[in-house]
Length: 187
Image (tube, rainbow, N blue to C red):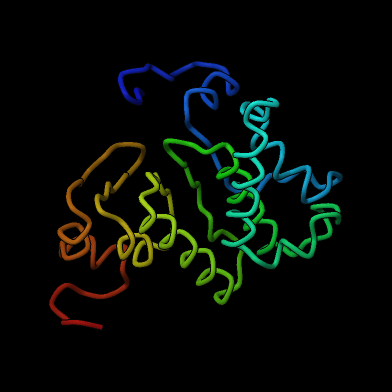
């Protein structure tokens, strides 16, 4: 796998992060015993030297603006947050790295529908701000509504790719992933 001509396959995570790629893993993986603030600052670790302190502070404010519920919880242990708040924290921590590419692996996994809407709303805001996001998501309809480009994987192989609107209207995709038959018309 290459990003901007750099082969990242097999590289250590610190190297990948320093080259502008941040991963928000499936299952959140927050540091439960560390404070929300510490979790966020860990996201900026590779760039938090003294010369970048003002930018890190500004990015913290941006992350908290995206997920305001975290602002009042900065001193709490991350493990004390609800699952949805932990997912918000994981996304915000990824953003603190100021990545060129943000990888989101199943951000809706295990969340209540209202929290899923909040996460997807935040992803949409990031997208409209120009963020490059690679989203792996089980909720195909929501992912395709956000995406510019889509890939369908079956058994680890790409079986269909193209503009998201074309993939979304593909009869096979509609039938298999969107829960409606291609000939049934709009939902």
